[in-house]
Image (cartoon, rainbow, N blue to C red; front, side):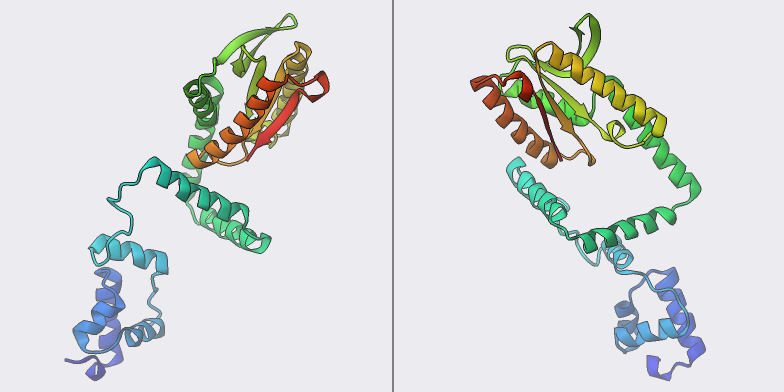
Length: 263
């Protein structure tokens, strides 16, 4: 029987069964009953049947094999991956305030739609990751360490240093050129663990800065505001190398030994 000859009750039953339960598309249903997809869509709205958004429709099409994933199975070399990553970073950095605010609103909406168990799990995972990074080094610290070693720098990683009769750990220390590198994650400038913890971190960082500079070293503080990505890490590393090359050519005077870089 063609779709035009069905009454509303039959149409509602068919759409509910094929679209909602069997996950068929409006086009699939239209093909079965000799009509067009927009007619099925309009009737779905008429019968108050929830319509999948674009993202859900795409996932369903990929899952059922109707569409092939545009990148799945594609192998790219590191150079291509870096170019893609760089373009994405530039896209976000150049995004206007209105678009950025809209994305923030959407992100908050997605967060609000999570269950309490999902939120608790994600917060727990994030907190564990921050604590783990404080012990063994963050992804960015490890990345910078590996890159510096590959470029021939001698690097001491999280090694305890004696600074004016005080023993402190420096994230990355380059002894041959007297440069200390501190990688500061969000807890160094945002109240991740609360305002009191932030105040303690700021006081500790200021003390550490004074001790490092007091020993005559150059201190480069790397501010990490965003989640780690290799592309952003490469951009930071390129900026870091420029400073190191200048320091190797001419060691800065005592008033210019504190440098700040970051994303």
